[in-house]
Amino acid sequence: MTTHLALLRGINVSGHSMIKMEALKTTLEAIGFQNVQTYIQSGNVFVDTEEENAAAVGFKIKQEIFKAFGHEVPVVVIGPADLEACFKNNPFLKEKDIDTKKLYVAFISTTLQSTSMNDLRISQFKPDEASIDGIRIFIKYAVGAGKTRFDQKYIEKKLNVTATIRNWNTVTQLLKMYEER
Figure (cartoon, rainbow, N blue to C red):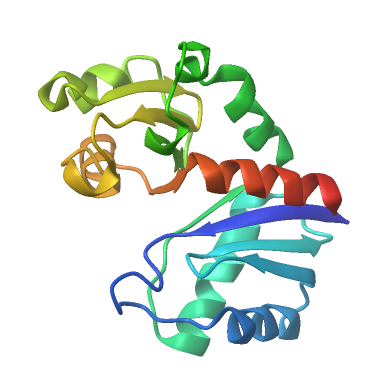
């Protein structure tokens, strides 16, 4: 059995694409996923399956959400190593007196090249900062996620990828949950 973490983008935000986590859990169990566990209403779902391919798991979840709830929901599937890398590779954690409430991680559907930073044109969004690490973009917002144009929509448009962003508290909690499974 392999445990995957599916990060659903854009559900239960401002009354859009509403999906109750208990209904999602039941739906995913009905198609064969085991030990389904959700975390908060923003679409973090752990599933156990014989399928090892993360992309295949994400596709299956995306299809089932559309069938059951009628929502086209992008899904990025990651593993524990992806979360562990957040702690090892986040350059902003090395800063003295860092305010972790301003740290976010954008999880991307495909591996990014180091040249992708140029494509993002992050300099347009100073004083916000970002750093690319494979399938992650580490973000440090100067004021907060709600007051920037450097968001998931911008990242997706500039890089032609699927992205979903989680705050640092959520990333920390998801890693703890992986370790407890």
